[in-house]
Image (tube, rainbow, N blue to C red; front, side):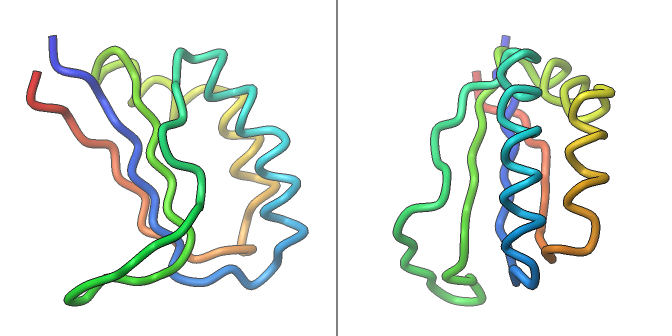
Length: 97
């Protein structure tokens, strides 16, 4: 069964305090839903139309699990805290196998 991934690229971080509060709630919510963070920030070299800002990659055992994690009450609470603190491109994608 193909794995599922959250891919999140932050365009701007306008409120680092909101991001920090989000991280405190999001990390346990993601782990409780079976997510395994593979990339949490770190160095970025952007090419073409890429953005050299914070990038996050989280792996789940399936695409369905990744979708369910995003919809969970615990993660929704984290999103409410984040609110307008960042602008990001967030995607849930299915792996090859």
